[in-house]
Length: 411
Ligand SMILES: [Fe+2]
Image 1 (tube, rainbow, N blue to C red):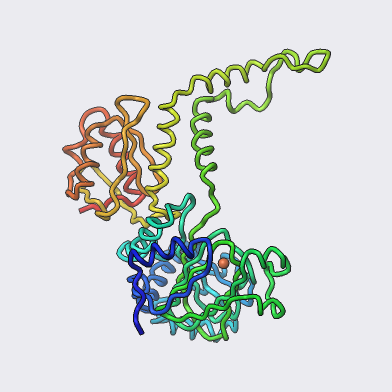
Image 2: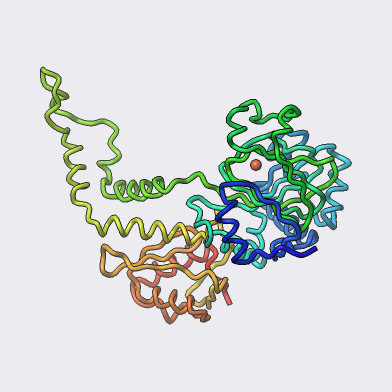
């Protein structure tokens, strides 16, 4: 069969006809994301599960049996282990214990820096054509022998791309208009009479499906094993929320301790006729603050929050490896496609901001800025020569913050 290329022509067509409009089923897709083998995925799962066992915290994994979500403390005991040897081996062990189980691992790719680009190659193209998500995208792996999605028919606030890895998967969909008229669909497993109004997408490894955020859906299977990647692109954060969050942040800072008062002192609430003739002092003071906000201050807060937002590259979190920096460390950008973003402050002449992985640092150190520029140019840089004088301790701390967010490798 001819393979479907996810080229510019595809993405243009997708953005125009499918994105948030209607479902898509594509057979035999040519994408590196799909070329990740079941064995590679198994290794990732074990790596992540080992980390969870080490810290005694299964966050990132969810486990359902017969549609019921397992308690956190029980999840650790059902995760894949090296001795399972493969996805099939893991399934063999689980299948003897549970006739209906579903293991969900969110952000699995976050544990493997080497595989992250497979995802970002896909999302970069998507974002270029439909826009950057105001919230984020999340990649999860769903595996098990479960016959239906554990929580029944539902609608999420995200558009979903699915890539089956093993087994056959069926997704049953109802459009938003039908869902609105049939609220009984919500969380149900009994939808026999609604079936004729649904669309069934049957897919196997190599295929890709997409459905818009408004589509009601449930996954079905005959009880044999399947594993599926699912990329959810959240569309529940309107632009106005981003703007108001930024303005709120600016105002919170400006208002300082007066902004935290929970009672308002007043002279008189109203006069005898009920008329209000003035504001309490705290409000007059805050009004002055608002009136004195400069256009540059507003531009500055919007710019740096936009930078902070895009430094996550459209994801909820960025993969990281714990690194302990010292002045003697020699750094290299971890990924030459992921520079540390920076901009000059618009409000003070000697400040700039730098951002990576959703963290933001503010600094006036030219040494630090030069180091960032050199790293972004692809160079390996020893820290010491850049950080001099009184600010060097603070600069090192700033670098550690960026390192914790995953910006560097240490050579
Ligand atoms: Fe869903």
